Image (cartoon, rainbow, N blue to C red; front, top):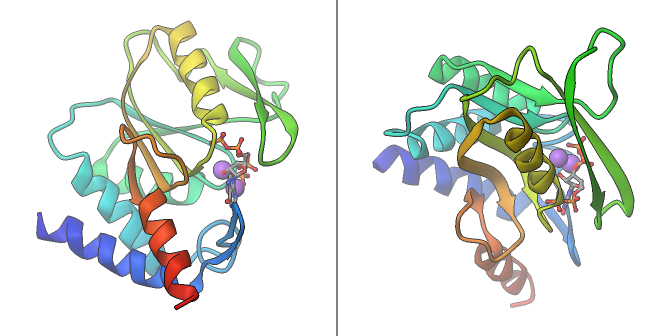
Length: 185
Ligand code: G4P
Ligand code: NA
Ligand code: NA
């Protein structure tokens, strides 16, 4: 609907003027993943909420740390819990699903842990995150959901750097090409 396009336009314009794009790496620390602006939360969560209308699901699943800010707003707006996968296992987490992936961006292995107490068999999941790059994080999340017999119904990321078109995003790879192109005009 109109709200969807409006949120996307507002975010797109803000991103175009404030993201610092340096080759493959995009710096959004002033508004999305270090300092977080309230209007950015409104646009991102509003866009995902509108995009998910008609999908019947149980929970959001994100990864610490950068997904948490807008996952929490989305959770509040849609009245569904959110889980954030943890990168370190707390001692209180005695029964868990685990997956490991190699991050090309960071050139390190990332381990993800989700307690069996929160991700349940049959859960219908919406995945949310800030960036989708090579898909390493999503592969781990899919692995964990498979172990849990949970089903991922939708994948929402703020910036999709890949050409995958099964992912809901506010900025995709053609947006990025256009934005980078405009800088050199
Ligand atoms: P992938 O899972 O989609 O393949 O991505 P990758 O391993 O390359 O990403 C590793 C980390 O780097 C993720 O966050 C991801 O959000 C982040 N990332 C990927 N591309 C960019 C980028 O262009 N700019 C920025 N700022 N981050 C990027 P993380 O480090 O695991 O966690 P956190 O930042 O959420 O705490
Ligand atoms: Na992230
Ligand atoms: Na990040």
